[in-house]
Amino acid sequence: MTVTTSTRGAGDELVFSRTWAAESSVATVVLVHGINEHTGRYHHVGAQFNASNLSMSGSDLPGFGESGGPRAHIDSWDQFLDAVEHDIVEARSVGLPVVLYGHSLGGLISLSYALSDRPAPDLLILSSPALDAEVPKWQRVLAPIISKIAPKLGIPEAIDGEALSRDEAVGEATFADPLRTRKDSAMLGALVLHEMEQVQANYASLGLTTYVIHGGADPLVLAQFSAPLGELPTVERRLYPTLRHETHNEPEQREVIADTVAWVLRNLSANS
Figure 1 (cartoon, rainbow, N blue to C red):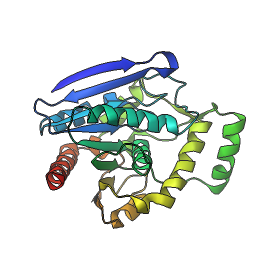
Figure 2 (cartoon, rainbow, N blue to C red; figure 1 turned 90 degrees about the vertical axis):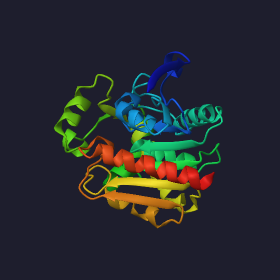
Figure 3 (spheres, rainbow, N blue to C red; figure 1 turned 30 degrees about the vertical axis):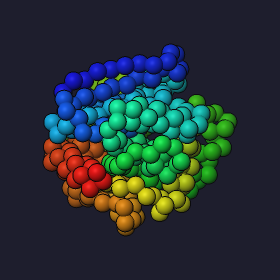
């Protein structure tokens, strides 16, 4: 495995990217990470993909990790989609199949992207995709109002390490990470809630061959939120009953990633 980093742009426009290059790559997996995190948390995923000749690349989203922009804030959902499009077009330029892989918020972004008219990947993977949230109605009503009055108002995150994984070390490392954001802007929250509604209204038109991964004990994004996707003819949904939000960081992570790799290789063959 060869891991490289690169940057483009400057200041708020700076984009920081990582690539995990396999020696004999048969496809490139484009990673879209979750909220308050960054691509540096996926080294073990990239390594396991590389062992099966799958390269992986991804950029820290605007406002996250080592990319520029106000922390955990965007002015438009297109900022996320533009970032994904750049990575997909770049991955496509080497002439290999492209797999879009999004976790949590990254899953919402990836599905939103797949439902758009932007350059499409060949396959789609959604890990614990944030397609809905348990938010009181009054908060949903107030979100767009607050986002207009104070768009950069920081809203503290309300999760703990136990929600991510049964492995205590995962939570400890996550909250000790200096690149992790602790607050999300009011505008980001409002845009996420709006996009959830858009995706729920349009997901039935998904035509891409898709793999959905979800932990049955996920307390952050309930497994029931991704269940409707499993009813689509192009989707295979894999539920791990006892796993939590970050299935790729659970004690069974190697099994989860191996299952994902097997699905990718099987479907690359079917599409060749």
